[in-house]
Length: 211
Image 1 (cartoon, rainbow, N blue to C red):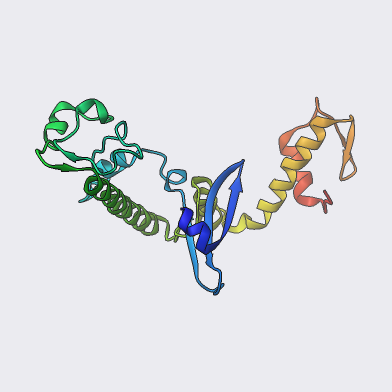
Image 2 (spheres, rainbow, N blue to C red):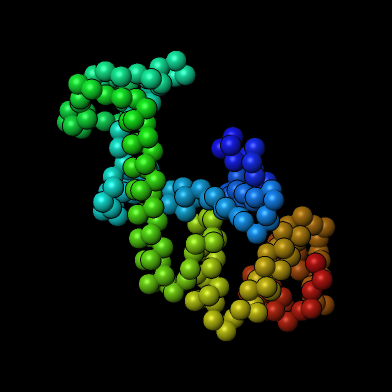
């Protein structure tokens, strides 16, 4: 990450105070871009669980996160004690035991498996979505963005124009709740206590509102 920041222009995109994507651009060539998304915002589950669910070829490996520090990166020897590993059963631990265990090599192998596993999961997920909804989600970065794309593309139908008015209605309801009361909408008096949602929708769809 440090190397990317030092050599490329970085443009982060935030939502609700969280980074949802990073766009990297070559400092000498603006046409070259690398987009990085957080897959957890689309598939909010552990990679191990997703890999098993989607039955991919490359399953997530095991690594002694509790052991690693800047002073032991060159460790070589027998496999570390099970207490250094997280979420691993005795049977799974026995499957990784070795008399010659190289920390750097295992770290590279662990990261490689992570990338391959996630790549397989996302490929299956993206293809499934396209086959069911006929939508390409490769440029969408969150679950909510995908859901909105579904709705607007395949389910909104002839009411697409009304989508804008429903949004305006939401703003009206917020404004009404803030008072003062009563208020007038399209010539009719409404208040916090007497407003009827159906009537408000009818008024909204027929009003030329300026909010």
